Length: 459
Image 1 (cartoon, rainbow, N blue to C red):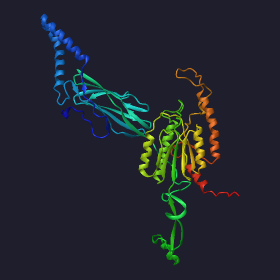
Image 2 (image 1 turned 30 degrees about the horizontal axis):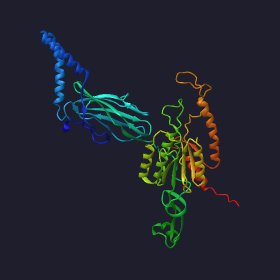
Image 3 (image 1 turned 90 degrees about the vertical axis):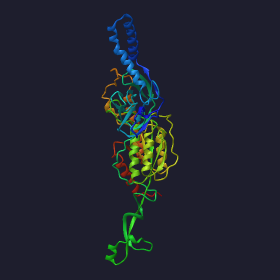
Image 4 (image 1 turned 60 degrees about the vertical axis):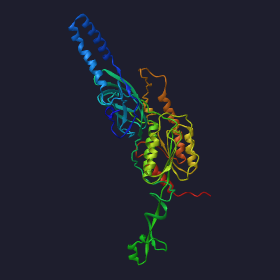
């Protein structure tokens, strides 16, 4: 088989494997031309009607030329056959809100029509994901939400240039991984407790580091490069710089994927659900503390994302981002996967709408084990907002008043939830709503202040 008839697919990206050749079949236009032209031509010859023969001769010539051109195509897999089309994505990894180009490539000299099934939170150009062109058909796909998307199956119809023969094919889907948006947090890198022996956090004890603690007389064993020559020359006695040691800590992200609470229909378009906030906030917090040199791990209560072991550096950020972006929006059985033990002093950030009893119990266990716990409330602000009622009943899509009082029920549920939030705060667990990159800054500062406050000794 010659390579000249194969689809010319650019390098890079991901593509479907080459399938078997397509068997071309005559189109209805070709069939009508052959039947009508042949029948009328026979009648014209038998009846001696040259005028009728002149009328049907173009149909016969068109059908004959189309058939001859198909048989004489160089490098074709065989008579009445064409190489299978190939679906290609420009990349298999895309940031949230990014655009990827999906293209279907066919053999040169043929025309393809492509239909791509729509996907939720994905917008195509052309709008209805239907296009036709020669040699290659391109579609632009913009994805608004994180997650794992299956692009396809793609329905393709291939025809020759004359439109006399065509074949249909269905190309298998390709996976597109959309990573969540992780803004840079406007929060300090300091933590309430330090655990490790090296890092970017300044501890309260003296040791090797860069933060100056004191200038003291030189002692045996001190490093020579730490000698303070200015004080030494002024006092005449050898002095050295004493520094605070720099340590790292463990950061644990606990995600509640047991439920996914969508915003109310009255909320602005593209408002995030509780699962959207959980995934995006987890990615932002992980990026923030990994940049500071800390060890970051993830535990998923709903086992939708899966556990991620503790690690450091850019590689751990890629592992966490991949785990978050591979998650689906299909909520599982609702059973919480409890975390048994946690290291004392671990900075634990729990992302939850605080609607499940197992999640509340898990927060209590973490506090009892000595972890520094922060709860990020992921319940959409529009859910349970009493101002959205306006004293009017909710309307159904047909305009009639609904007999289901979901908005009122959520208002009551939010009021009941406030009691849980109040009890958590009374136990020293800060609860804050995720409102952007600056959400954690006051909470971390308050935890640091509480950690450095003097303790009252009880007799």
